[in-house]
Amino acid sequence: MAKLMFNSYAALHMEGKPESLRVNQVVPSAELDVHGLPKVDVHYTFSGNDRRMQDHMVRFGKGLMRRCSGIFVESRVFGPGHSIHYAGTCRMAARAEEGVVDRDLCSFDHRNLFVCDASVLPELSEKNCSLTVMALAHRLAGKLSGQKGHGDYFLNSAMGISARVGDRP
Image 1 (tube, rainbow, N blue to C red):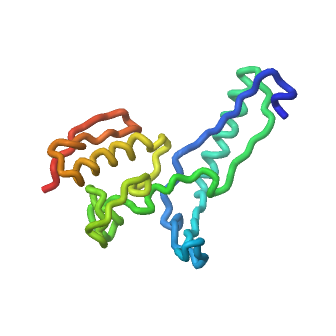
Image 2: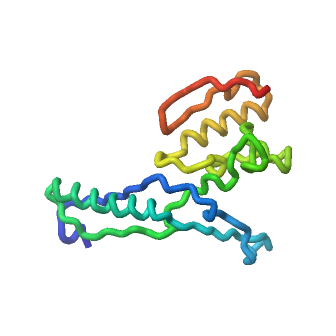
Image 3: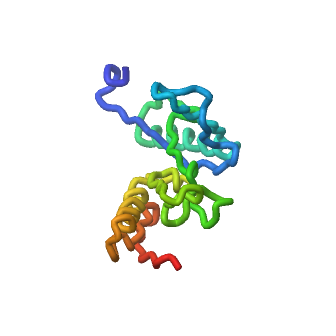
């Protein structure tokens, strides 16, 4: 509809770092998939601070559009599940009591199982986590292949930092 009314238009999609809440979790579902395996149920709730941040972003976006001589057409704040990266669901930690995998991405419960995706990040950053996941994958590939020196650098995509990671004692 906007294309019919205007020669050009802009869509603003604003995201912020949500609070990490223990009630937010992914658990096996009672419902099975076509292979007979349990699906997952996502339990996610926004905190009061998350809602205040969303409201602020909507006000900021409206003000930005006004300052650019734009017309604000609509605003949507989506509920949980529309834009979720499953960070923290297989949390990386120093001890099994605090997470699922160690710093080498190896499961505490199953020593021959490695997890390498955004689920190992303890919390979701407001930045895109793709570069961090690629750096973790590069490092894990080096460790699994046994290549000396391969994957010794950790990239922090949020900060743009490259730092040498020491060998585990």
